[in-house]
Length: 498
Image (cartoon, rainbow, N blue to C red; front, side):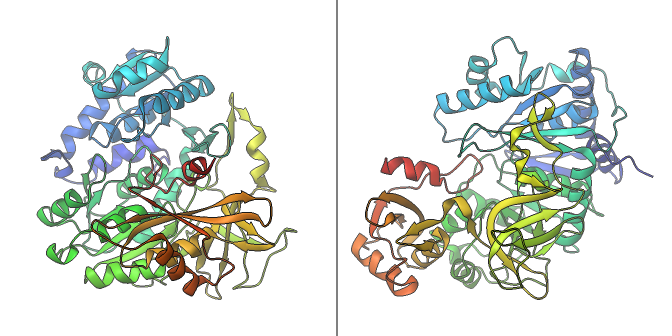
């Protein structure tokens, strides 16, 4: 039986097939066997640098071929990958502060980064060794994966920290191995093996896409984009005949602002969409303008190994985030913790042996483990399941706006605004109000040349969500803030109201 660890998974995936074009980046295809040899040399280089089992290694690289190789090298050395997403739009001090916290909290023994990020990383790293690029590591001797147990720590992934200091989520080898296998089984479509991936592989979503590909029964070909740009996405999808893509709702909304009809993509079968829910109207418009492309939504959290549920090809339900993976059990509970009936809203809870080991606190369970109740993860997300087990996500509990005793979920207002033909995307937050508790405020990014006014957009939303839930204030913005994982950053929107 195969050892269910990530270093072994990657090694076996490289060797399972004849040599082939495996990763495309910056205009060049990289061959599988050459990549495997580079990863083995990186592993040897880490060992020569004194990195061994259990050591944490921060990986802060853009979406380049060296990123998955560095992750494989860390796992093969028996060490723990601690990924940091280097957000392209982040001010330098934001990335420096994030790195400083992760390095101090994790006790990392080394950092692997890119030459372009080296000054920022060194400003945060202090005495921690920094490898800027992988050339030094690749001078090491080739070395295969050391023996690890499925229960050993594989990834220490830090949360976004929007509600407090970022917490390290501890994920085991076996859990991630099985989540990736189950995600591959649920999502793969025969003959569709070339994927366009602009989501960062240092984010849980992007890492899950990569790991799922290692389980594929046919050679997987990955086209990496270092940052998302809509014209570049459409060009690469056409030129390289991508069969699928991994995107976020913000990316789809940005693509809708492009002349999609001028970019036929006959080979593109589907887009996986995660990180946050996507409105039904947005899906319908995208699929109308891109005939033949199906949007398949999924749902997950870092704490569940990134993937909890997914819409299987051919069995999708629009508006749903799909069926739970084989290793996850999903229960929706009311405020008292009791299960609710199908169709009723409550907090989404996940159980099973694929969950996180806990939150990091010097290697011990931390106070954030309160999210685990009797082995079940309380996600903080509001949703429901239908009679067939399909999961529907409404919004985050913490993002809900309570106005005059009525609960307003931002997503329903955003879905209404995003359906306006002049809108690229919107973000809705609550502003403290002494009279009603919280007031609904919408930030809206318009398409280039659009003429819609704030008043017209407020009226449009009111017609669709009612007067109670309508935004009392609409703020037009050149662009809306996104997190490094390319999700809408509601915390940054709230800060604009402060």
